[in-house]
Every structure is written in C-alpha cells, then in structure tokens.
Image 1 (cartoon, one colour):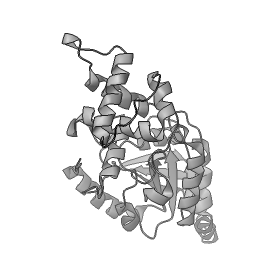
Image 2: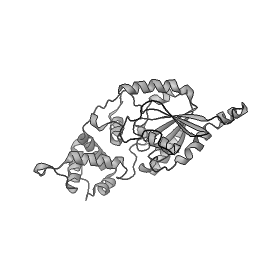
Image 3: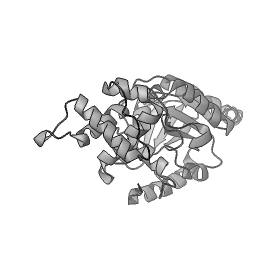
Length: 293
C-alpha cells in the first residue's frame, strides 16, 4: 500500500514555519502517543534545529501507560522535554505553561537580567494533521481559538493565540512530509485518521488493522467486537486475507449485512476505525522506540 499525500498547502506551511521561527522562543511538537514515531514529521528536526523543544505526547489516555513512560524516556534521551496530555479531557494540559517555563528557565533569567520583566514566552505549536493540536491549544487557552476537527487539514494559515500575560502560542497548519519511507508509517497514520480516508480503500485498511489487532492485541479485539475468539491465521495467509476473515466474523457478530444477506465488511471496517480513533477499543500503543524510529 503506497500512501502519498502532500497537498500544495503543505509546502506553503513548511515555508511559513521556517519564516516564523524567528518570532518564537520554543517549538512545541504535538504527537499522537499511540504512534509516537509515525506521527512525527522528521522534517521538524531539521526545520526547527536550534530551538528548544517540548514534545507533547497527546492522546496519552488512549495509549498504553507503560509505553507512554518508555517513549518519554526515549525523547528525553534525545534532549527534549516531554509532557503527557489528553487534550479532549484536559488531563495534563494545566501543566503545560509550567513545562514551557521550565524548558526556558535560563532564557527567562537572561531576559530579567536585561530588564525585560513580563516579556511573554512565544511558542510555536507544530504537528502532523489530526494529532489533536487545535484541541490542545483550545484547552491551554481555555477558549475556542483554534479550529478543531476530526478531519485532517482543517487548520489553515497563521494563528496567534493569547493564553495569558506570560504565554502566546503560534498555531500552524498540520504538516506532513512528501513521501512515507515505509508502509508501516503510512498505515499507522491512516489507522489514526491523520490522512484522509478518501485517499485509500477503507475496507483494505480495516483488513490490515484487524490483522494487527489479531496478532498483537487479540484480547482488545475480542472484547471490543464481542468475539468468542479471533479466527486463527492459516498457513501462508497474508494480512489482508486474514484481516478480511476477522472483519467478516465481526460483521456477522454485529449483524451488519447488505441486500442478499451478504456481510457488510466495508461498514464494519469503518466502524472499527471509528471506534479505535475514539478510544473505544482500549489502550494500546502501536510502536515501541526500538522498532518505531
């Protein structure tokens, strides 16, 4: 499955970020805790090199708690500060301002020595589409300032958001990169909705996701789809074929059928992805640092 998605506004966004870096003191990178590697744009490291970085592991409440800690340790080992949040519920968001102040404590001290008391910290918020960036900003600002949607690519243009006397945020549109280097990265982004469902076959995506769950998280699949058991993979069976049989089993269990009494596997695939993206299938992380980066 070759997924490529780089609309013209992504190129414009990259140029905009490069131009606006001089206006900010710190870069806040929001990533999806369920796919910490795949939801990072590798271009950000080169674009924002030299600026202090705070990585926000968002949707942490939908990811495996132990893996959140593992990823936090990994990113701190790279020299970044890390904050776990769940923007929808607001968990962890109240610690954001303090985390930013801590990262910039030496810089803030220098400002005070120069008499620049009360100078607000300016932070640029970046991230790939649909990692919850706008929802996060709205929670931090305690008002609906940034456009938020479950659909990728909603935020457009440069938006300054005033949080308080000590902090201003620069929101930016989500930016992906020109080409996914491997199928797993593209698949993970598609699973979580970071790329639009319209650009690929949802039923095929559902087959891949069913196979992933069947192999790594069978209990979540059994409980989430109310299955007696996950159909075992037959010898030589690939992910799509096995995943399709699991889709059929789940569709039959939920009574999803079309005319002619055929199982509606496409609808089951859409429901599966919607439930996963909404956190209804349980908490699990699809990547670990050793194999995910």
